[in-house]
Length: 153
Image 1 (cartoon, rainbow, N blue to C red):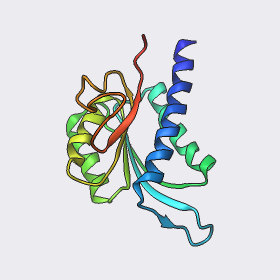
Image 2: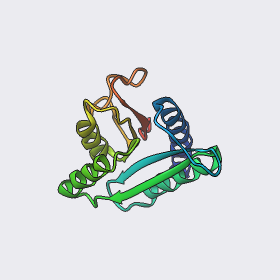
Image 3: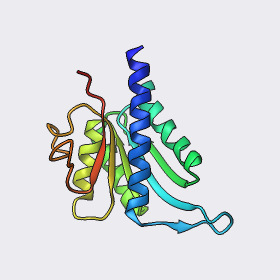
């Protein structure tokens, strides 16, 4: 029961952060047929896990609900850091508007790779964003990164 509630809370928090991040980043192109905003989003998950997969599926649904078109590039590094770095390099080569890292190792690698760029990073399923060095504090993340924590008290 707690895991289901946690998944729903994470989904809602991520939805709000993602929507704010996309509308704030200012990089959009218009779809000629509908006039809807379109964004290239690179999503990487650390492992194939039901709760992590639910976060990814929810991101796809958010765009439909908000009338925003996401051109999503999704990959899973299967806990392999070499594969993770290649996935991030591919996202950067594809000039994504936003990267989403699902789990701490992915978020840390994305933050390092995007330092000094204008690519925002949203993280999900990170238990201790401050301890991982992702954000300065939970109230004021600093830098070009934000996200949700899955820490349970």
